[in-house]
Image (cartoon, rainbow, N blue to C red):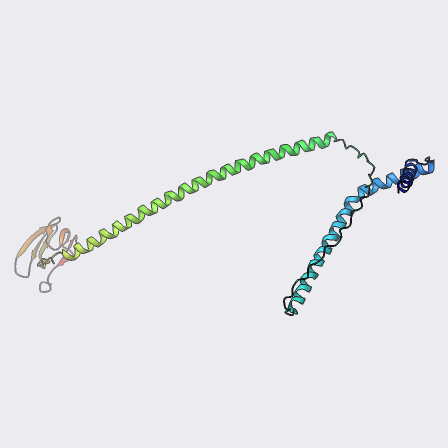
Length: 265
């Protein structure tokens, strides 16, 4: 038994020595190694796109599997047959296999090129930052103005509500006063006033009895006489404006004319 362990130890030692010894590297192998490093760097740059594509493929496969699972589950759930409950058979524990540890290969470290910012890019970035700051300040001022407007609007709405309440109370008072006035007018109606009928005495009708320039003698139907001249006032006729002996007429301010009676003509 000890001899077998010793032989096994010697074999492992020989294998370790063989792995530790590396053959000399030729120029062709060095060139191949350079191409391999270039391929590795190219593969490194193309890895994000491949990873993205693989991730999209995996997501699509998962979605397709979920759709198929829902479809098949709904199909088989309709065709289920009730089965009597049976006593579960205890499962015997299975032997757990020991995990085999394999050494992970260490990828070669590739130095990424350092990108230096040009002054133009820095100027653009600084100008963009200044523009963002100015926009933020403008947004803050606009927000402050909106806040002030909102407070003013709230104050105005409160004042309008108070005015509406005052108007409603005034309308109620006016309605109450109108009802009181109606009741008072109903209870205290004024007595009807008798209109005094005035007797209008008709103006006497005058005729010319005799006329000379500037003077005329008038006579009424009841026989009363009256002497007038230009400017005299006759009741019912007004003022004497003109005495015309040629045409035998007297013109008054009311537009009425006095002439000879038909018996005299």
